[in-house]
Length: 292
Image (cartoon, rainbow, N blue to C red; front, side, top):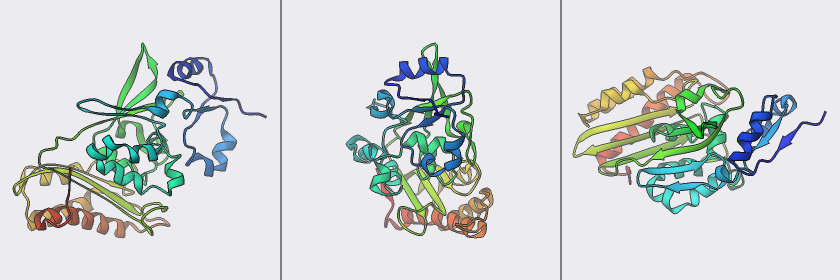
């Protein structure tokens, strides 16, 4: 049986199409995740391209407070955009470590989110950047605004029921004064490998005092979320080796990794804490901390 497939040209066409579709929809943007899952193709009842939706594929729109990125914008466009490179280098760093250049030319932020893998390389970065997800279809002309933990519920599981889709990702610019950032992915290779774990850190350091910090690890829990207890331990505290060691232990307790074919839970706990120590120790030693 031939599967019905659609190529809506814009958001109006997409939303109009969805009002008349009765089957569950399988959305395709870059296709880099779904193309390798034969069963997902076999179970699809209706295919809808998001790559063909001009607003979702072409939008990189800046305002004074942040940037709106279409969910189907290829990662390579994000990597090359000068505004993103200047304002959000941590996002560019994460995108560069996803697959090969060929994959980056196809893969999208929307797909990385909707695939809902805890190993998604951009997800810890989107979390510390406090991304807002704009969810369609629109109701009374408005998208629903949601946060990452509200959409990603567990491995391969999202709240996007009833043919809902991610239209845009809005990223507010972090306050630039006293800002530092850190992102590291641990895997068999720098790229073209699924991460054993990753860590994103965004913070503000004035003198020796850590004014605020956001921490999110990938591949260490069913759901991507920030390490709130570790953040609270560090927030508004003088940065010292003693407090860094305490944060290492707190993060190891806070995450909930599993053992699988890529790594053991013990290794993930140890390395997550070590990466956090690396990011904060660099600030004390003033060796390699990234600054905007």
